[in-house]
Image 1 (tube, rainbow, N blue to C red):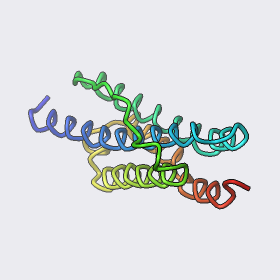
Image 2: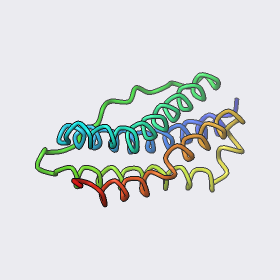
Image 3: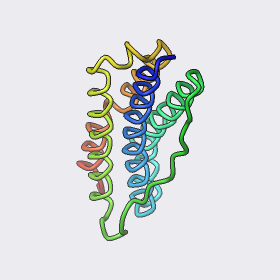
Length: 152
């Protein structure tokens, strides 16, 4: 494999890792919000926000690891993010999660628009990225709906 191809694939993995880090930050924020909610609201948060986000995060990590393995590149361990201080509050944590998911979505859109996944990737990579974007696509809308009815 040409050196340029190897570097392009490493850059591709780094771009995906940036999105994964952002999704990890969103998960940490949701976890902190969950801890401040009563049981009924916590269950709503888990169903409407946490599970879809966790599905996208898991798919992104799997896509990253499998692509690295298929091309003989080093994978990466992703560490849990810290959500911030408890005084941020439920609303603040959820708003932080929305910002992180929007950043991840932006990173993935930019990556896909660059056509790098087509030129240096493979069908499995492209399918994985599409699944991640699908899993997180409605996150902001669901988060805003959750906040509109929060505490009622």
